[in-house]
Image (cartoon, rainbow, N blue to C red):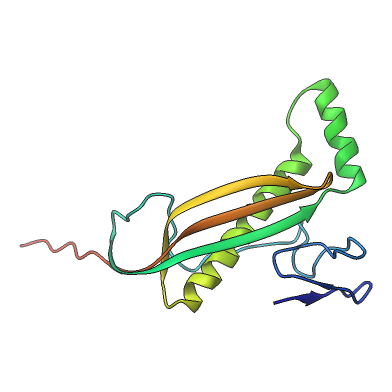
Length: 151
């Protein structure tokens, strides 16, 4: 599902958080403003210790692409020279990963699932200034395990 850029009116595919025409941030995807709430259990393991998997719905994916801006590049270059961590890029990675997980969660819900297992992440660059973060997992339906105690 594409989105329309409020700055230039250009159309960009969902998954891209910057306009392909002018580079403006997608509304609601600014790395300093995104707050992702995941409403379903998600894990990198193939099972849940606290839930029983009742049905498998198939693979689900979440993708997001963020553009690096000039100030972030200058900050990262300075950090590269003097050493240390690049907080600006770390923020983008964290928020991009959260956005990819949120999209994966939405797609799992569309399949009728209420959880995702076996989550994996892939990070790569697109061109010289774009960071692509992809997540994948298996959409499942789970029920909480009963912990009955005989008294």
